[in-house]
Length: 199
Length: 434
Image (tube, rainbow over all chains, first blue to last red; front, side, top):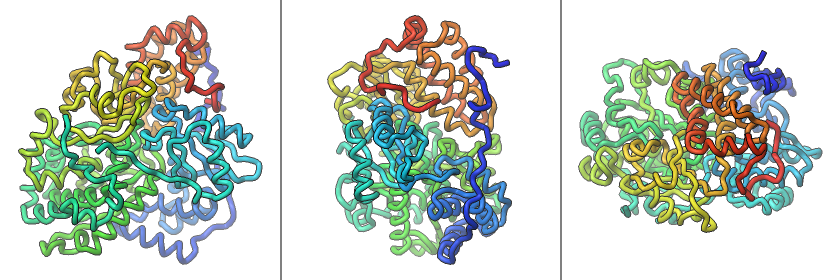
């Protein structure tokens, strides 16, 4: 019995539910990727290779699009730890996708400063244009829409991040234009991150 | 009070992030040269005398932090630079690293020399990839010019600076969680003591410093502790970067002394409230601190000044809200953040955050009951101070502070069964499921 009977408390609502990432294709680093990983791992003491696990997982995600179980196993092998230790890390951090995503991941910041400037409406406009709800990928597999927490550029609110690029100061009415621009020109169409500082 | 910028001069000029610019226009790396001519103890002494307080949020004196690092330990020592800037409303380190990254590299090198470390790791949040590229380029330039690497300036001092990329975790900004994350684990805080100064990264003595803190060090070494302390009120010396966002006309990062009042930052620096509306409330130090009301803002935006006013300077991320803002919605928005970012290690924070969000959502939808308001206070009270790190207090604060000042709005939601605030910037329909 929940201590607050008016609020439903079901397992479906509980966020600690474990979702397994798909197996994915067999995975191993190419010689180039392996060399790059070894270079990054050399920044840490030799017995602390595990420090580079985040870099390794980003490399898996860059190639496959998300972090597969086969990818995690290979990372564990390369580092010399157990696959469970790698999964432990991969499932913790918000930037690792555990399911396939679209070619462009559109992340709308939903935290206070952006929300005050209308981030909810930006999400709404994009969701409407793509016919999807936040968290979903459109039918063509091109766009995934996500609501994320503070991206650290509150002066340019509302902030939208597309893959690793930024597009800031996006008014709700311009949100749909962003989709058109990315569709036409890809990430190169984004205006990027410019800061404003008072002299 | 107006002052010449020390951390962010010329940041608007093109190429301000290059080594040539830093050397020619900003006397770059002269502080490192000077520090290497001093003993490490002298460097710590001057930083201590300057009264430099950590810019990450807690305001702990940096010189003392460095002094606590166990110098006699046979293990290697480390500097971890906290560039995981994730506190809602804060974007100052972002600017420093993007436009003046060599200042940070120089600060890291001086810090390493002071505590006897040979390696500094700059932990940058994963979302700052474009910023990371600037910092990496700056480090590469510094190596090439001999400001990093072996035998810097012929002094026999070796120093390596590496960038470590995070992958999206607010909790990684907590110093022991940052260390855990650097070790390749989940970013979850450790039990303290032992503090990082004794047992930090790889169980070695470690100093964890914020980006802005380390960026202050070169100026202190160059111009002296007395000059630095004189830039602000007693015990709140030096320049400070303030981030003003939300309903203001000109949001941005402003460098000022800590004599400056919150009122002046909002109305003079950030151009006042956008659209000529009235101020309703301001969160002066990132989302984790208590809000101030319009009659409370004529206080210096310093560590001590804001504490006196009943809030905290925190990370100096000021979120300004105008009179259209619904405070129940504000609390709900922030609890959504804290629920999502809780690392899950301590039960009060993990479960408490979840319940606080559910109850706030219920009240915000207009389905709440009067007793829910006291229940909110009770749950928040059982989260604050009952967790390993300060996250619990941070998550409880938005609830406690909004109910303290705006209880009538919570009651109106329950009574009317809807939000009674005019807010045309809100979504027409609720977006996403909670």
